[in-house]
Amino acid sequence: MKTFLTLWLIVLIALPESAPGEEPDEASPVFQDGEVLQYKVKWTLFRLGTLTFRTFRDSTCRGLHDYKVALYAESNPDIGIIWLRGYFESTMDAASLTSKGVWVLERDREKFIETRATLDEETRRLGYLILDKNTGDTIVEDTLENVISCCQCPSLLSFARSVSDRTGLYRVPTFVDRTMATTEVIFRGEKEEIEIDALESPVRTRMFSGETKWGEGKGVAGFSGHFSGWFTDDDAAVPVRAEMKVIVGSVVVELEKWDRPGWVPPTVSDATASN
Image (cartoon, rainbow, N blue to C red; front, side, top):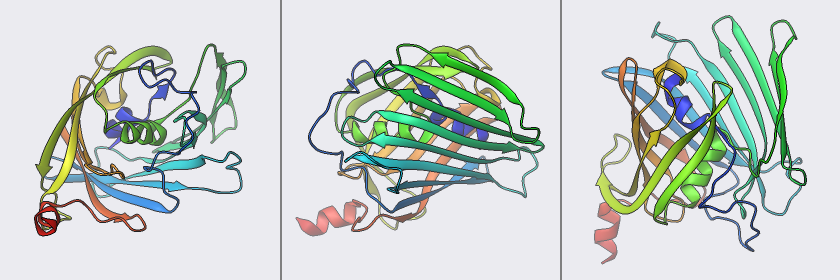
């Protein structure tokens, strides 16, 4: 569970091939107010936990294309390997795909940590603060220079969804263990029909892969190395499955429930019926 979050809980400092900060006129169709996606996280025969992804607008979304993207993580209370509750939220510009700030609450048994990061777009400085919520003490407060976007797990996912119809290698500088590293994400234009438990028919997807470029063991729960994922092959680019290796073995994340107004999964049976 916590391992899966390592993939998406990374602070994105620059995206050379995506050119964040440019101002296209239209927002990515991936962003839809009211979207809720729920995932089960599986390890061998066991369910490790649940991830819930949300996209919404509220009173703090001041820009024309501003959206909140959030991920709530909850481990399975019946599995003693891990115990985790986490809330991860970013404010994104759905047109430029830049992220303007991060708010994270993580509870791991007795530990309760809050992280806040705010990007000053004019100076390109990212100020971040990490607090111990149990004591109120500051763990670390620092500033990173030359930052053009500040993403974490849900905003990184939204960015990847938005560019999944393209091809190319995205080298993503990542903040891991308070140091800068790189995560590579590759879209080759590969299409695949896959099956998930929540759908009766196979769903049409875009496949991608990636590789972490940080030292072994630096990721949470030992996450490192190769990973793969599948987004639906439509404008929504809904994530339906992810696979990765961790210290305990292979972890699978799979879509099980969704609420996206007007969206119908692009299943193979639907495509056949329309011909």
